[in-house]
Length: 297
Length: 296
Image 1 (cartoon, rainbow over the protein chains, first blue to last red):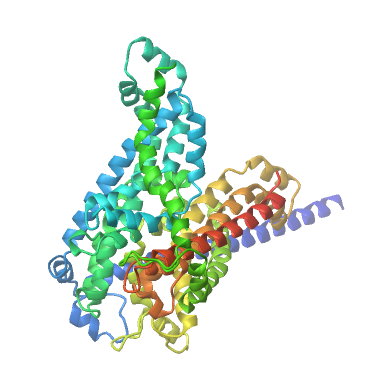
Image 2 (image 1 turned 180 degrees about the vertical axis):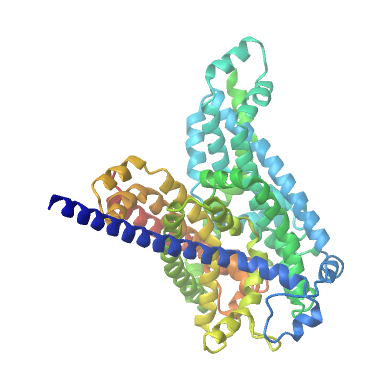
């Protein structure tokens, strides 16, 4: 009697375990399906832009129903992206703008963070509080006057005018200051005893220790610069100083003629590549950096 | 320590100079502009001091259209993108295989130029004389009628705008929520497992309360970000957003400042301050609600 009940309870248990396995198997499949579907949604525009960019102009326009592949890829669109419109110049401008802005910003931010974290002087706390308060000010509010200021200084259509308003960031000063604070004060005192100057200490000790934060800030700023659109649009109307975002808008409105979509897509691919390559190399660092200090959306 | 005074200020000098010139002064100046009635940048003249600019902006049909568009965008995209990001992050945290690959793919839109990829969306959704467009092909497959999403009816344009906005903002939200989910102490889940707590209960009683600070952070930044929408719209509909009927409040500010309808910094200032007031109000409401809800 006890034996049969044992067998049947074992059977019940087996059945339950199997049902559970099937159920969780179904759940897993559904989860992967959902994730796969969204991955497709994310990747599809990229696929479409590369695909369209290698389609022949005539072939593309002959497709009333768009095709998902092409058998005769061509690089002709890329050639015309660089020859018909000044994509090369937009590209170079953006590169100069990004490097200069990021470089100057790093100097300004590092100096300020060091001042706040290591030096003692009257009024420091007050200034720091005021800085933090500035974090709440949206750019939309100050852009109007900045536009007027830069225009009055005659700096429209110059790199200086493009760069100047965006070389400081209170948020990055704050991020770096937090990091500097964590470096033990004893190191600084020891350096002082050795007669090391402040600037040398900053360069030789603090910066190497805070390298991860510096990298984060640099990456975030580079992404921001590469994608910046509003300020460059306000401050440049001479094609010579367009950045890629304005360039692509210019290409859309007056470039190849509205119907040359393949050439337009070639330009889009060229513009997207630098950041995507950067991302594929540093994706771990970038994702950690953004989750620590990024905002967008 | 006394002799350090000057040196300290010297280190801060560049930052203070730039912030003062491009942040603090403009803040005062924008208020001044907003009360200088009908200031014209070209002729450098105004018609006196008062509230006329605000009244002009509030009676401008373009501004009201922009407010309407922005509010619809905010109301649709903030809840949808946050909810969707939560679902995807929960799914991500329940698997092991391929997780890193999925995470990397999902983050891709964050590092792309919105203006550039917006053009791809335009091509996908647009219907021209030469082609139905990719999305219409899909709609036809499922037996629907073709629609021009870029130059067509209002709801269709609004749909593309919301869709693209969600596509653009999801990477950041997914990233934040997956790291919030990963930081929940696994002991809670183990205890729940021992007690055989049903899944939905684990979710509502453990997961949700633990990640609620991050969730509210995302909702607040989501509201702020969505109210400032502009470049995504330019990418889809071109620079003349008023003609497309798809302008946003920020777009209105920039159009007043510059471009074909530009040269009126005082109207731009009034519109920007109205936007700031709206965003501030919504943020304060959000904070009040979250203070009541988030208690750990």
